[in-house]
Image 1 (cartoon, helix red, strand yellow):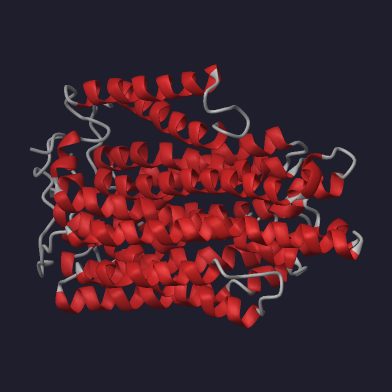
Image 2: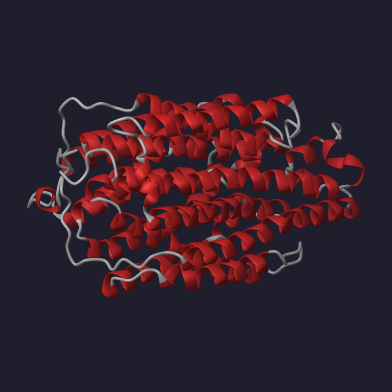
Length: 513
């Protein structure tokens, strides 16, 4: 692999700050697409399908991003960041166009899948660019900014989605990506140097295919098991078998190929394993809340999509503030282990507070709870990437950064799927007489806020109490997950960030020894 070193990348025509700004814009484009559709989901479901399709709108994007991330990271290691970013933008825009034109749930889900393939690559390669052009100590502040961008998109995305849904239609939540994608493509074309080794490279196609099969099996098993198909049914068992065989085949191929898509030697590095495990848990927590809090605000509290997006601002402020401050702390001290150790118990407290909400909870109180959660998710999200990049060989930055995104997205997709199953089961058990499945109550099946508001008062109160109560187990699970992340953080090794370690293009030959 031959990658651009900081000295090669930072030319007078492409100053480092401008390159990082360009990478942040690409990151914002991709990360907004993860969350902007959240506040439009109730409208989409009422227009195209039933409440059972809610999780698929988010899950299929997360699944595709999870599959696309490691492949894009490896390609960036082989060919450089610029051509991979350009290709990912084009794939991303194609998916946005398909989804925006969708007139059925199937077409929308297909478009989101294509969009996710490009989006996962954009996030990974943009984060790799930061590692390429900066010294380790300086990466702390930059990764804090990257984390702030992710936090900003976490809440601005739903706000933007709500505004576009109200003022135009939910289709514009996808169409809005097109002009900004063209601008991002233009900026990348003129700002980023070529870099990379453009000779003929051997790509691990079997490993990529087997990894995609394994990840797809995991998400589908979590999504369908116990809901669309019983756990003990043949389809469920078949999914498990396919997932297991795909994983075994992947391990076999990766242990023998010269340029593995995900080198197994990375899993012998403590900080790689621990940081990715924590990011998996953070992905579960963040995407679970981003999916279900807007539903609570619209269905239970009766707010519009735009207002429900505004009410998520405390989560963004906490996320952005915590991310930036932790990045500054890491750059000044060269230390990071203490951050997740302090953050995770307090995240558990925030999740437990959310588990107390009722239909009558004041929005200011809810905002305080969301602020608490955001403050303690933000630091871990940015610290984890820098800890991984500091621990792996310099030539493996692309694939290592991709792994951090992959595990975060796996956590998000599995978390949304599991939380969706928990929510559906809880709602069904709380509604009397199978009310949710009554084909005569199409408004209830679609969870349309307008139609629920037209129910008789006693029935409406029952539905809203059931809806809120079904959310409580989700937040309780998040609290338990945060405690587990705290236990993992204790065994994280402190590797002080050096003032400077140039990225050596010969430091990695495809295998981590």
